[in-house]
Length: 410
Ligand SMILES: Cc1ncc(COP(=O)(O)O)c(C=O)c1O
Image (tube, rainbow, N blue to C red):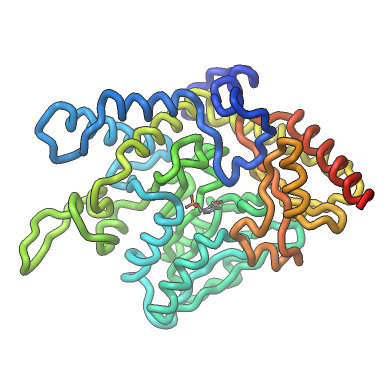
């Protein structure tokens, strides 16, 4: 059941809410890297800095209290967005990368010891690999990898095949940023819970696209970045189960995360402050709140439906081009299509597409193990936001054919 309002806006109306498209004649197919920002988000950022800005939490004057309220209201918006039980479970961080590092270096630190195992999937972004490697090296733990199949799916079975009594943590992506596969996270978390294994879901590519309900998924942690959910950069979210976060040591020390400081001993603040040392990204959090509100007003189910339609149309268009090979054909796909074209290097293809005002991402997409699995060093990735439509993929196809001609004439 959709818990959001479902005001339907036509596609043109939606696109006109993004000032970037007024000023740039661009086919933007790179939302998996970062989405563009609607006017309401830009206005809210301007509004805070212009009218309501002060440092938060300890100010006794009105402006500081207003800014504090706006920051904490944003936390409540996030809580509702992911359906967490309590705002204590919502930690503002810089982004998904910081959230995963936080979990790996605090929660995992006290839950993982020598010989214990952490399971990741083949399809992880480097952000969900490297923090675990650093932690595993320190704790003498072992990282195990659940493989994806030929199509690019990571099954429930491939995860639990790896589980042993030593498995303490499963950390997997909700949607692969490199090839678009949607993982069966609810099944994974349910089974993990029954075996006493902690779970983290990297929701970077899912939060902009799917209704996220952390209680329904049953994960212990869920992370995402604001800049991919139509919000500002430098802000992200760690959802963590209150009892697990309560037990974990702090991530960083500093102002705001303490209860009492003496040179002999310091006691820490409760959640969520314990994990938000120092002046946070106040305006970023407020901007993120506006972005999630914008998404809720559109209706997550409308965003999802539209993206699915555009991605399917895009796939059909790209597959009809001779010489294109789609990398990854998962059963359930998010907003991402990865491909290679003839023997043209993806960087060359991307660079030439840029000359036709088409923005796609090229390279390994911070997912080198995924590239290795599908025997490519890089791909071209087209990814969609709510502002894209079929015409964008038609323009991409036209661009690819023009590039092909350039190479024929070389
Ligand atoms: C699946 C996934 N995880 C993690 C990240 C890292 O996000 P950030 O760089 O915003 O911390 C990304 C960014 O591309 C991603 O797509």
